[in-house]
Image (cartoon, rainbow, N blue to C red; front, side, top):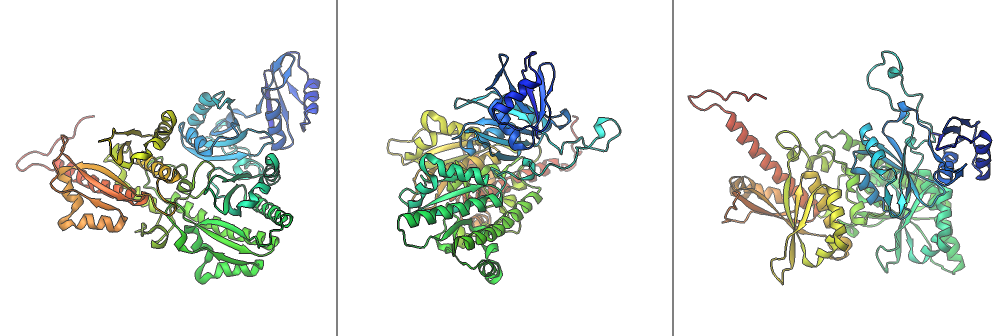
Length: 608
């Protein structure tokens, strides 16, 4: 990972020239320069030095009239699925980056690399080589907010041909395990995969934490190798603001301790006399495992660290704010130790849920739940409504989400997006959903010059259109969403969240919308069930209101409308259950068609 390739080298360049350049820019190197015709190689002592050389020299420093190109030297056998993307705009939201990367394939991991440059750097691993190759072709040099992205391969030490080696290079395994300093070992904060540390701080201390022109927060970030987001614009006028820290567990703890010390100093300087406890935010679905049976885990943490810990009541939760506040009182040193133990339990719970999710084999193919924001990540650019949906595998209850959505053991979304979403064969079938939103919210969904609805459509992989108003005084507008189950899930998820973020619903009010789906008229009775049994069970299971209006006249396609009303999870579960009923009807029809007719010959299989 620390060997560099230097390209676009003049024929006049010598080893002494490179020695001089590296000395001038104070870039250490651990070996001699190997200068060839048009290119050169050099080893750096560590990843930090290699990254500095790339950041400082590549495309910026001339040698004998030629701009040098510097990147990681990657043997062909290790040019697999791992890429490094540099020169990312500093203010770019991670949500936008994630959705852009997902266009080219399945992103298995995306890790931020800490550098001294203003722009951001990430290491990305794709599921397949051709996906990584496509990103190299499409994004290298791609202009984004006046920044040209730089994409290069980085060594994939795990890359090796499948199957046993018969002879020659094809049979060789990668040389050794990944180095401990490489991103693959998790030494850098992950954008999606790791759960971050989220804390609440009094609003009056936010300025001190940021520092003059951001100097203090930059210093914390650099010293702790972390990415810190202070959500100043959330909850305008609130007495406290959330801070999200992305790093290794050690980096998170170090940053948290530094923030507590800054607040303590500011309190002394401003003669603030009230106690400043540490307040950690954690998703409700992890809190039960943090507390432990009969509160044993929490009591042990209190005893071991000499702190007093309290947790906010369940009554404070809503669908769009499912985080509990864990308040820790004690000295800074004691609070720091308590934070380590609390987050250790939270991360264990998260990893347990992730493992459970990975065991599920009946999800929609290719569905990336991390990219949907199902796991509480606090990713910059994703509001609370997007980043704090319950994780799969978590077992919530009535008190946290208004109803019990988890009817079976195992990850909830895995069961919801199960075989019911699959067609009889091949790829998932496209579905059409009519979602009704407040008429005043149309502008927010469309965005300036239609940018938001375009981005949403691109991210979800769905066609999203807003139907014309039915009259001048119409209070609702219909959003027509066409796409497979995964696209429906993504698009509706973001629309619900956008309405909450834009304050079309109150702070403690859940977003509840009405969705219409069309079903064949002959299948409407199956949705209702004998004496309304099926539709009643649907409502009890999903907490959504499900109505099949009577005396409907089927449309030109012999279809009738089913109305579904409720919050996001309720609507999604109801939609999937209804699609499951329709899939059963289709299977039965197909089986009926394959049965031999009385007195006739069974149908011959069609030739392919």
